[in-house]
Amino acid sequence: MQTNNTFSIIFFTRKSRNAKNELSIYVRITVNRQRSEISLKRNVLFKEWDNAKNRGRGTSTKIRILNNYLDYVYNKLLDCHKQLLEEDKIISANVIKARYLGKDDIHKTLKELIAYHNTNMITVLKFGTMKNYYTTEKYLNSYLNRKLKVNDIYLKQLNYRFIIDFEQYLRTCKNSKKQLVLANNGVMKHLERFKKMINLAIKLEWIVKNPFNQFQLKFDKYDRQYLSERELELIENTHYKNERLERVKDCFIFSCYTGLSYIDVKELTLNQLTKGIDNNYWIFTKREKTNETVKIPLLPKALDIINKYRDFSKNINSKTLLPLCSNQKTNVYLKEIAKDCGIYKNITFHVARHTFATTVMLSNGVPIETVSKLLGHTKLSTTQIYARVIESKISEDIQNLLKRFETKKQKQLLAVK
Image 1 (cartoon, rainbow, N blue to C red):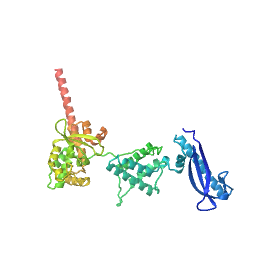
Image 2 (cartoon, one colour):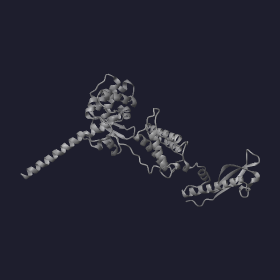
Image 3 (cartoon, rainbow, N blue to C red):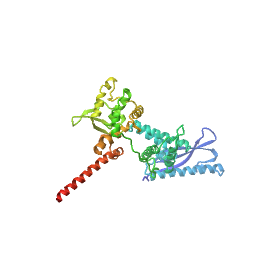
Image 4 (cartoon, one colour):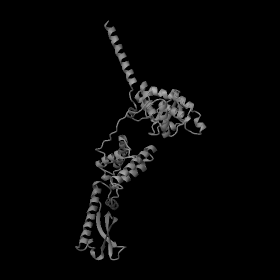
């Protein structure tokens, strides 16, 4: 703690620019001979100012109000100096002035935090992730304006009530058709992003107490959609004369046998195909979402699809390997394909990734550790979200267990004889 600084506060006046017979009042902060001045936006008549006491002269109501205000300013500046000492901050006249005016880090606002986060994270986070943060920002601004009737709020004003009131606001948001916009998990994702911004403020020492300390994010768990072996075969064996549907179907099947996400399939190039240690073709790539390196041996059905479109990039003068349209259109076409195949599930392109993990890999005895590597996950717990043990696998494992029991029983009988 710094205690060797010289520190003083004095009030002084200058001739007013607006009135010839009035003085404008200022306060000067001096630390180690370095000065900083603040205009108090107060005026006083020449005859009503005491230069010896640096206060208003007289006992009129006007002078008493003025002197009370000057005493308040004096005490507030002393308090700012004390706060900085307790926080072990570097003390200077400008720092004390900034604290008094609410322009230092301790008086940062929510919008300043959001702007700082989005400016610095735009080069770190993916475009899609940043879009989600911009949406969270939109909801926060809407909550401030519509519910709190303010344009901004200091970070130090954030508390547990702010969090739960914002949660309720998100839960009750409706669109132009008077329909609720967000389900529970959508609300939780916005709060999760808000929490990450608050954590950044704590690291920056812009806020001391975390308003999320007593708040728990509660996501609903859902069984993620995936195709069974029969459903996967139905789509594989369905062929279209319509080129757009045939292309979407093939790209979807390719993802079912590689586990690549939509963006990774869309960005796949010929350079990412290489011969692996087994002399077979592998995909060496980095996941767009996490930048995690993945190495995937190409299964025969995936390789067949690549061969089917081997002239695609040449024909359209493109570096990409497979003909994939926008994610939105792809998902629309997939619903049409699912309907044609008699599959009554909400099929999106991401279902292929779940199908790869569950139907193609885990149900055929591939260890979850291997599946985790193929999916490009850094944590095994992430893979467990995708993985489920399907009934046929449970039945197969139990039958194998019963066979082992029977074998042991037979050996015991032979030993007795």
